[in-house]
Image 1 (cartoon, rainbow, N blue to C red):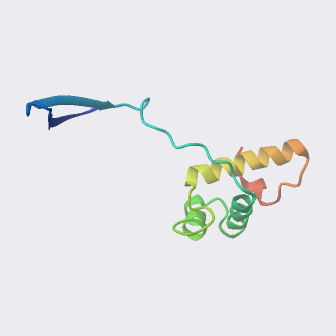
Image 2: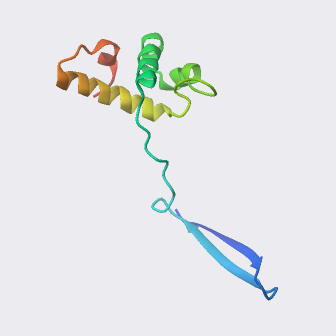
Image 3: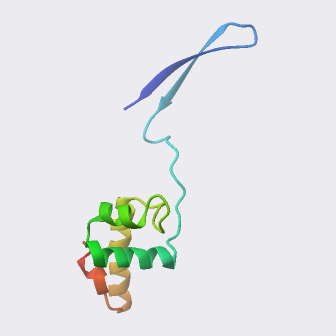
Length: 103
């Protein structure tokens, strides 16, 4: 989907410049990847103990506006739980609550 906008700004001569900007999926700036802290991981684990895999509920309780997971999305919580489960399997560590995360 391409979104085009006409921005009629005046140039130095006072003439109206026609500028077109297009926004596609490819050129939208992505947020920079942020490494998970131990505090965030512990908070995710605590949230999963209380709310299971209800990622939105975990984020509502431990996220916005001042919680430890405030900079994370529900998809990031799900993905981290899944990758943490895989890491623990690979390293032979007890899965704990991450056992309920999907593969």
